[in-house]
Amino acid sequence: MVVTKFESWWVERGKCLFDRKRQGSAKMGWDVLVIQLTADNGITGSATCMAARSGAVSEAYLNETIAPVVLGRDPHDREAIFQELWSIDRHEAFFPVFLPGPIDVALWDMCAREAKLPLYKYIGACRSSLPVYASSNFLPHAEDYVAEALYYKKRGIKAYKVHPSGPVPFDMEVHQAVRDAVGESFTLMSDPVGTYTLNEAIRVGRQLEQLHYEWFEEPFRDFELWKYTELCRTLDIPIAATETTRGCHWGVAQVIAQRAADIVRADVSWKHGITGTLKIAHLAEAFGLNCEIHTTTMNYMDMVNLHVSCAIKNCKYFEYFVPEDHYRLPMKGDLPIDSEGMIHAPNAPGIGAELDWELIQASCRSYCCQEYAEGSSAAV
Image (cartoon, rainbow, N blue to C red; front, top):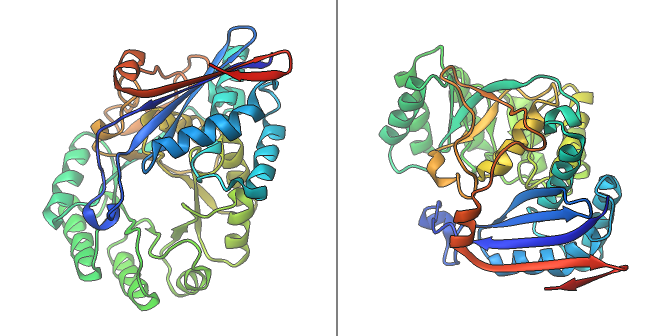
């Protein structure tokens, strides 16, 4: 089996999910690229790719730099392809962090389909379901977080993560208001995606300890290792980091070595696919740390996150980015969450989720195709 066709569709989602403070003056269309690989035996593998700032840049990287690496290759050679893309990245490609991962996902999907196994069983199953936590957007008022937490609690979900939008006094108001509303038995986390000073983070962390939050995530940029080390040393609440750490498992290894996180983060979009995410999860397990899988902001790729989470032991929750309507396209249907707040891996071969091809075609801004024949690729 070799990959003979590489197709991509640039799909407009037509949503901006950030406020003005986080969007800045640049475009933020939150588009996606749909990728499909086809093998010489007709088996396909699919993935979706973020194109939040520039679909044109993402499309060009995929078709000019990544497609030639994949065409003509055996999709089982995922590790070799992973290593080659890293070598290319080091020598003047400098991929956006979310680009190599979807290619790896499509290769895994193709091979699991060939094996007629659901992806989590093809990787090596540990379980088939896990509890979800609803994960908020940045909301303008404390009462908005309260209303959302209570809504998902009523739906049977037993955990909620706030993304308080700052400044620090507002964040602390949100933390208190949500805890008061949901009660002590409900699990809460906080992720300010912050630029706190160390003293601010200690102050907020001590509040979260008193309110019995599960973890405190990303109060600094991920490269601020000294601040993370000091925060981990000072507080008892677990500190979650590495969501945007570059360098896949090599980058996360430096964080662990500096004792700069109690929980590490990874996902199949930003951490070089299933191959990269598994490397990070297994590295963390060796040091007795959990690897909590981070949302990709795309339901289809979050289904892949689900399969990976079911193939490792050291992940406690599934991150359910809400409201789901913002993240469904281009997947058909909703995530398989039951009335008890558990999400279940599908048992169909491969990823086991269906892309909405009619919607993809209707929302497609551009389409690219390259085919492999007799040792060369040709754009169509």
